[in-house]
Length: 97
Image (cartoon, rainbow, N blue to C red; front, side, top):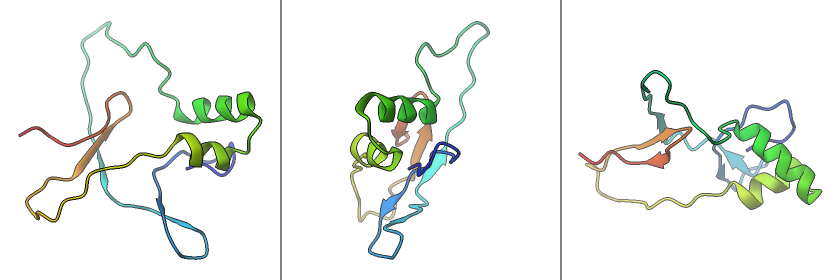
């Protein structure tokens, strides 16, 4: 979620409170080490992508976040289920082990 171009993008969850959003507190950033010379070939600057979409569709940044930035994750009542992991290139995922 980004409300203006100076905000740092972050994941938020809809909330019935006054602001309408809250921090989900679900994701653990997953570091990865890449070999020398290996790098991403896609734009991983999420803020730049959101601002480009806002310009392309002539929408407010908050509207772009709501329209294009939503993800849905499977929930589990099992307490042994591991946390959701996040990486800028890999997205949101769970560990396989």
